[in-house]
Length: 139
Image (cartoon, rainbow, N blue to C red):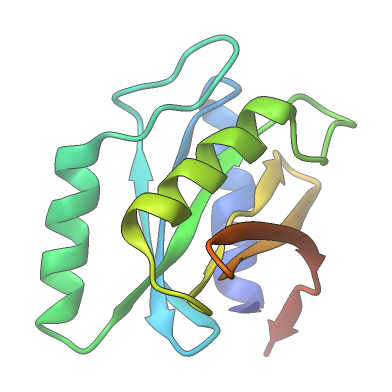
């Protein structure tokens, strides 16, 4: 996944004021993130549950400008940049119910003021594969 240094900084510093397990949506072209929408409505102690209305509104708005939905991010506690079993289950269900074979969506884990660890999900033979992906910072 590609991301400008400016958006990287915006994300890691904006989530600093949010509770853990808060998140947002990523839009862009191909594998390059150009747009971010922060979702603060549904933040819970142990899991991030996206605001479906905000997500669908974001996707519709982006589509008018040829911006694709690329995935969603959420925050974790410091020093916990890996996927939880709950994260994997949520992503797998989302992919199986909303994506076509070989679609790729990104699910970064954000540690405030520190890092973004990117995971890419892809449907292959109706099975969701989630793998760590490289974050490429632009500019």
